[in-house]
Length: 130
Ligand SMILES: [Zn+2]
Ligand SMILES: [Zn+2]
Image (tube, rainbow, N blue to C red):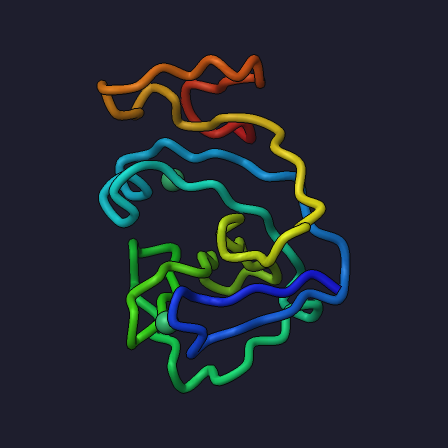
């Protein structure tokens, strides 16, 4: 069962069900909140077990979503749309081997100006859902 944690391990989690392929998000929110861009998978809330949730802080990142980070070491772990049945989980927080596979880049129109995307994966100017 895939497991992960923040850097200081005060918050850990495990996922019992299927994990989505990893999406790289280059939007301004993700840039500002991580210092670079986000690499995240996703799981149904029902399949995600968070341990020591009292060490987790949820930050209202926008009117429509919140981010979960460790209250002690500040590692960002989760992103969840308000009332969503799924939670995005930061790919780098998983223990190895994670079994994760990268799939695509989104919000490339907002990406930082100091790097190029050259891994050959599909890119989308905004969300691929639009
Ligand atoms: Zn921590
Ligand atoms: Zn983003």
